[in-house]
Image (tube, rainbow over all chains, first blue to last red; front, side, top):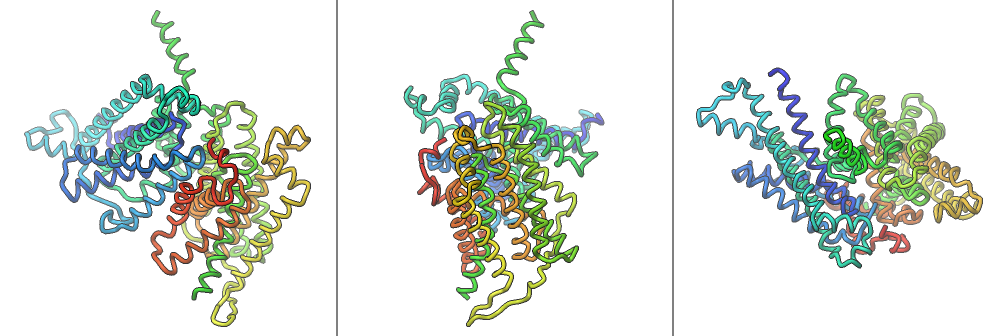
Length: 313
Length: 294
């Protein structure tokens, strides 16, 4: 089981967390709202989960739930005044929200530990291993070393979370809510004229995206066992947007693909590590020149499905 | 004390205004936010630093060098990252945002590769010269920065309002298609705008080096974000909004640091835009609130 090393598993885990983040911005984008505040919402989830488990010994699942809900509530608070804004204005205002939040995280040292951040957050894999050991289980019985087992557990939990998230929003996109989102994105006035409560659905999409970012943040905190304000900068906000736009924001598989590809690419380019982000930048430009709708769009998926049907028939 | 802080604030604010002008010119004409502007500005600062500190060249040469390099970068940016997107019908308005983000990532990492991540000293020959007027000490550097920024702002305002080329540029900004029909070479006007905006970024880079005495590869990002905040605050595409917004931000940052806490200094810009967007979404000098609802 040489290939199952913690490094590969960690990259895979980051792929999954990033995929959830990609979906989080996709949900808001599917109503035509561009939010760059998802790094901020992510920090709400991450810090809530981290502080609850380190300072109040709250169980990890409860902390993750609390972090997601608090981020969702923050989403409603930011979402309602943001209804007046759109396009670039909304993007910069939400980016501003993230930056203000980060300044608070850095300066409120008594609560957040300031620029140093919160360390020694219980790691999901370790907690589960300790729990299993108490019951007489040893990872060696599966032919795994402890650190392999820990990384694998984290990966599997994240995989489950990602699949559930994608399944939920895939289902949502085919429901009444999803159709309302699409209608609002295509033409807000027409949607309103057709009797769709615009305000409700826009705030709903905004807070769903925020909640999902918070969820990803809480999972991130319990996977890396360390969070600091440096994890939630402008770069993170832009990275999340790029997942969706590069992968394609027309279908939920777009951001998932974007997150996977763009997380693995810099790692795969490690042998030429000095130039990898230079190449990453060039790739983004080329992508927008040759395929501005993103790698995956509904037309591509239809073609896949059709060829799948033909071969099976 | 108060007067000295006032002068500090105006100096800082005039640099902010020049950075913001670079964004606002491009937004006014192309309706896109050039996310690479901060990095182009940073290259201006580095070129100035190399010429002044390493080669020992006089300040005007540093400005000239910075302008040449950043103008060339603007030309390349327009040619390879913006123009190809323009000719594609149906490309989402996010496409140009992402492609300029790509350029900014590229430039940030090229700068990191060449200059490393440490601070570089920017030695201005007359950094120590100051004079005292009554109770106030004024540094010559501040006066020079202020003069250059004023010259640049007045020059730009005159060029836009009085010359034929400025008129063509305003027409292009008003409506690309109509301007084209009326005989304006819009592609050339767009290129000129991006080049001028980038060159202004280069000048601002040298000014920042003079004001702070050191530069590093992070200034592109921090100044870029503030520039973005200023154009939202002043009103997108508004030249006078960018000038006023820059001055207001420079003054409020200086006074908050002087009389309050320095920890929240970098958050001021964003608190300001969140407040202004809620009260007056089109910005201080913005027009046509209906336009904002795109």
